[in-house]
Image (cartoon, rainbow, N blue to C red):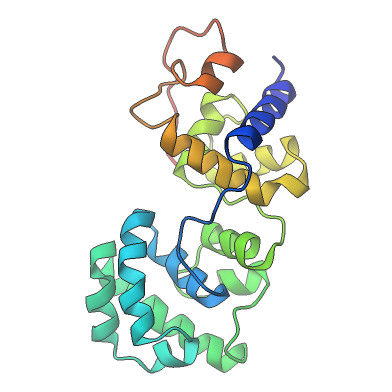
Length: 217
């Protein structure tokens, strides 16, 4: 298979496996999604979903969390790891949203990336899943699988993003990034597949015998 043929096969198979993939982080609006994605850095979605109900009882709007005591925010988000940094970021970005964006999450990648604690991947998730704007957030699952499927060389997360955007049609990006994540968690895991085990790896590289060494995100 050529690289494009592999990409086309991956997309068609993932549509069969995950025709309507849900957003794995529980949320009700762009702000609660933004906070949940921020908390998910170096943390599992399961743990985030366990923590956010208490956080959103404390405050589920920028106005409420900007006014909430920092120590209370930190006590709630501590199980997600990096508690002090994440608590400060949540409180600070809430204040900025109130001061500069009328209490609304901006539908702008550049504006999102200027918020405390919001990196490129977080901003892209919000753009894709809160606003439906075509984006291709690359997390560790996507970065690893794209290398195993030889859709990128893995030099950097940004390079992986650029390579995948070239290979897949724009109207598939928002759903496809979730489909790859779910496949990576279920079938092509870090320990369960080395590029020679799962269905897509075996189909794309029927003669591959040696494990694939991937670069970390």
